[in-house]
Length: 159
Image (tube, rainbow, N blue to C red):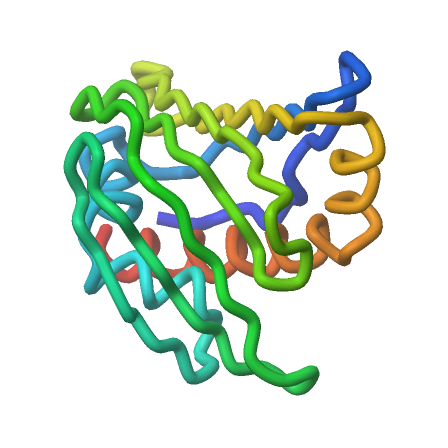
C-alpha cells in the first residue's frame, strides 16, 4: 500500500482549543492498535529516538508517563485516561514537563472511512487561551507531524 505524506490539519476554532485532524491510509483496527498497544505506540511517538515508558495503564483511570530523549534533552509527558471506548474514542489528560501544571484534556476520535482509511480527530482543551497558545508555540505541530509520519511508516509495514 502506498502512503501519502501529509501534515495534520491543526486549527484553533475557539480560544481554548486545538483541533487536530489527520487521515491515515490504514483500516481502523490497525490505527487503534497503534494508539492502544504500547509496543506500537513507542515506535511512532518516539520517531526512533530513545523513549522510556515509565508507566502505561491503558484503562479508565489509568496513568501513563513517557520520557522522550531528543537533541534538546529529555521531555516528559504524562496523564490519566478518563474514557476509553475501543476503536472509537480515547479521552485523557495530557501534561508536558515543559509546561508543568498546565493540563490539557485530549479527546481523540477514530472514524472508519470505509475505504481502508481512518480519520483521527483530536480536540485538546486548555484552561486558558494563554495555555493553548503556549502549547502551539512549543513546537507541538512539528513534533506531532513527525510522529504522524512515523505512524504512517509503521502502518505501511503492517499492511
